[in-house]
Amino acid sequence: MCKKIFIGATGQHCGKTTISLSLLHLARKRYGRVGFMKPIGPKCIDFNGMKVDKDAAMFASVLGVEDDVALMSPMTLIPGATRSFLDGGIPRSEPIERILLASAELEEKNDFLIIEGAGHGGVGSVLGINNPYVAAALKAPVLMVTNGGIGSVIDSVELNLALYHREKSDVRIIMLNKLIPEKRELSISYLKKGFAGRDITVTSAFDYSPLLADPTLQHVAELLGFPLNGDPAEKSRICHTIQMGAASSQKVIDNLGDSTLLIVTGSRDELLVTASSLHHIPEYRKRIAGLVIGGHTPVSSITQRIIDDSRIPYIRIEETSSEVFLRLREHVSKIGADDIEKISHINSIAECFIDFNLIESML
Image (cartoon, rainbow, N blue to C red; front, side, top):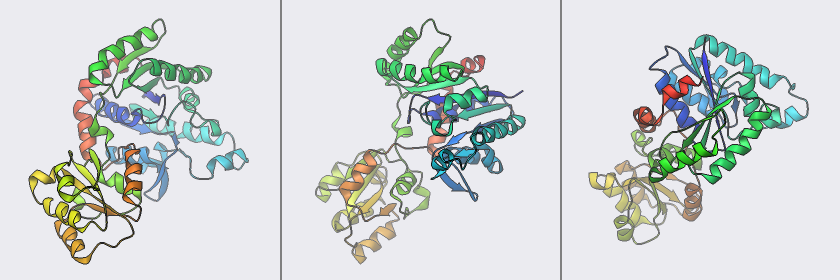
């Protein structure tokens, strides 16, 4: 019989996918066949000729089961789907029927199934299949992921629990994630007090990690909608610092942070040449992840040759540097199948932070 767990959350960016990857890694040490499912897919991509959820595509690649991706992403919220549903173009029973049929097939193929929800508890309500409803329909115990903290965490958990209780979902675990290391024990102890007397276990996951939170060069390119040029082997490089190249070239270089994505206007030939030239030097290669070259002004031909010869990763866009800087500072990174460094890091620390014995005992 296949064991199942539904990974819910109090909101976006709590780390559901990171937790799902951790459980995948830990479960594969004990179970011969481990599967994944994203019942509601709000963020879709083209994958093997199909529109599927991004996370489902990533897990299909990680697991090497690309042929099962349609089962792993049975209900996608493509543009127009919600209007079609409300207008009667999609039968009311179709979304949950698709999910139940896909889950049944995945349960036959696996011994342990990780089911990842989408966003907070209310996501999917427009189709009549919010996260708590799906978890209850699949008879899957719920692990609810939330960010670290005390008061705000209890508030957001209570808000979501009301919907899970209404749908008669079985919430068994609340997992704090992205904890501040020096506040870890304090947060956990007060959350346990806050939910004392209920049949819910409070546990913890990872400390906040820039390695997991910061975007890769490939993610930046996808966000901006332009190709990543230069050395393709650098696409998984993580950008820990995003810096505007507005000062003099010397000051910009002197103030480079760790693995910096440098945003430079196309007219700044001196800075572009300097950064490209320094990319050959190991000391600076660690500090310069790549360039975003903005603005309508063409890069001079000689400068472009130096950039290309250096093979420094760069993205050429038409937005101004300040516009790009603001967009990237507000961006929250998602993990993709090509993020080898991030996935490897998650696997390496999962056993230190995730109590799989506890989770398994609650299923």
